Amino acid sequence: MSTAIPVPDNWRSLFSSWDDLRQGYHAGEKDETVRGCARRLDTTAPGAEGDPVLFWTLGMLMLAPYVAFANPGPGVEDEVVAILRRVARGDDGRTCTHGWHPYEADVDDVLERLPAHLEVLSSPVNQALDDLLRKDLLPEDYLDELDEEAEPSNLSGPEILARWQCPRTAPGFARAALDYLGATVR
Ligand SMILES: [Zn+2]
Image 1: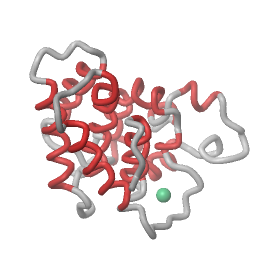
Image 2: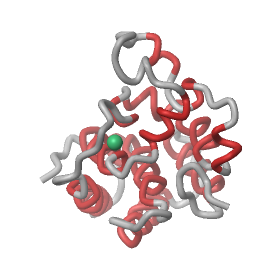
Image 3: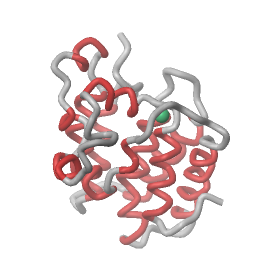
């Protein structure tokens, strides 16, 4: 059964350990958690349709505050930056018809809401589309501040979902994570 975005079977426990780490509650081996996510992204990307490249990229985004501010061990940041750069460069030469993508929202708002958004993004496609609301997929604060004429204010829930599913969204979130780390794409 396909889900709105591809996720691994154990996504919920992975995601909650990343969220704990982001919030400073994590009890396990922190650097190994970060490296584990980086390696999964490294082996998955660039990936075919159905591979959870976006999921692992969002994991790196969740872990970026730890990597940026909590003084990880030697080599961790370099490993993270190298794989994020490779994913970010996957956007080279790609075009789409969308005027906007979810990575353009404020990163801190996205991180705060990501566990809730992932619940929707990981649901079976038919279920995800049932009564899908914009606020299920974007931070409400962000939606409140937007110009009403342009994307994403004028988009429905399913149209916002299509932008989460766009192949350019993982590279965009990789760029957002690199920004967070103060690193450039190249
Ligand atoms: Zn797109």
